[in-house]
Image (cartoon, rainbow, N blue to C red):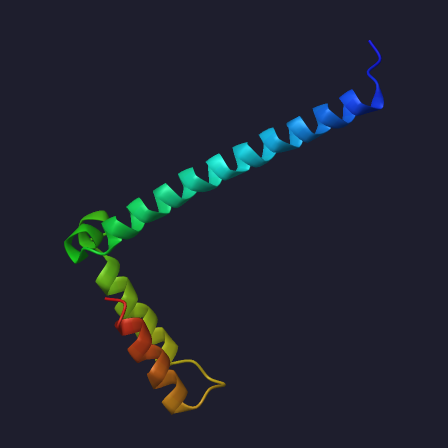
Length: 87
């Protein structure tokens, strides 16, 4: 069945509206998931329950940063302080 140009335009508008609606729905569900993860990770005991090696790994990274070359010692110390602040 051949539609007239007006019907085709209306169908295209309707299809795009459905696509936008689905994109918004997905975005909202992703935002909900992000908020749940953020709420979960704000509690230190939850972080340690998820990964009991977290603090040890962060310390290893800070120590590795201090061994890097190519930056000044003050910069490396600043990086290490920032990384240790993630504990």
